[in-house]
Image 1: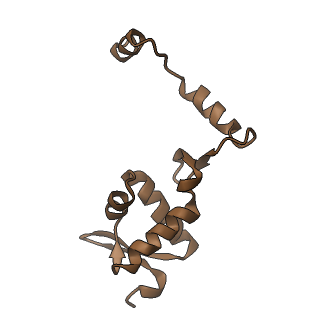
Image 2: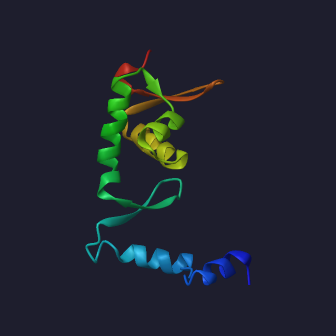
Image 3: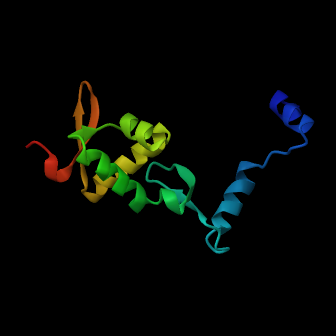
Length: 119
């Protein structure tokens, strides 16, 4: 038995298989549970509450960009208290909607509001 499993068993807990968790998460919407399963274009699946809806997060990202010219996924992750993968997904989704513009330079990738992009 793997070490992590024996450690968990010693605390009288059990693991949930990924397929069981995924199956249960797919039922959340039909059961009116306030957590939703969302798949991003990259294939990333997340469980999120209404506080982390795209509209709420995009509003917060726009407010970040109101106080500075541009931002990065790392800055958004730090400000919003999220991990880097989620911040990247939100920024890319906003880019696909036309709200943000991506600037790829040798120093890194930055995101600008479409109406503030220095042409």
